[in-house]
Image (cartoon, rainbow, N blue to C red; front, side, top):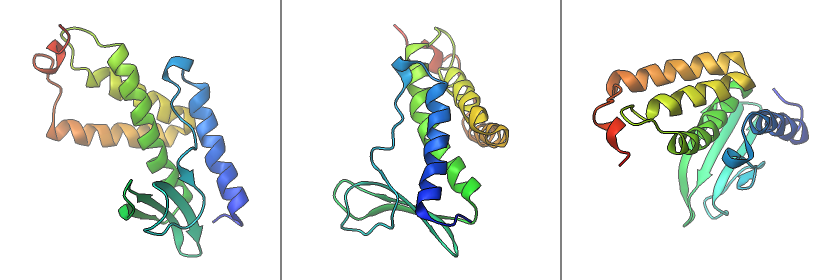
Length: 153
């Protein structure tokens, strides 16, 4: 558990710096704009609010029109960190895949590979957990090189 919010915020910022170091300027889309290090309320500005107390770590997402879009609880800082990294690596890897598509190949192959690569740079366990999560996605929705690989015209 963190001792104070400054220490907590510092650890989150370091994680984002690692991701930013790994991507070219073109794909760099990570900033902490819209992430607030305090408890949220349903009337607050839209964005992600991360905070902790003696019970655990929290991530609240407040929508554009106010109100909670999503509220998550995590027992450990690592669980919260993985969730934040998963979301932000998703943005970068989707952007990367859209610019690097290969005709005849499901574009998610490139996207998922990039996401795992970025997650692993932050923490090897994040890379493994990301791969497991992707495997679960692919169980339900397998790669389809015919349908999704022919989007390019």
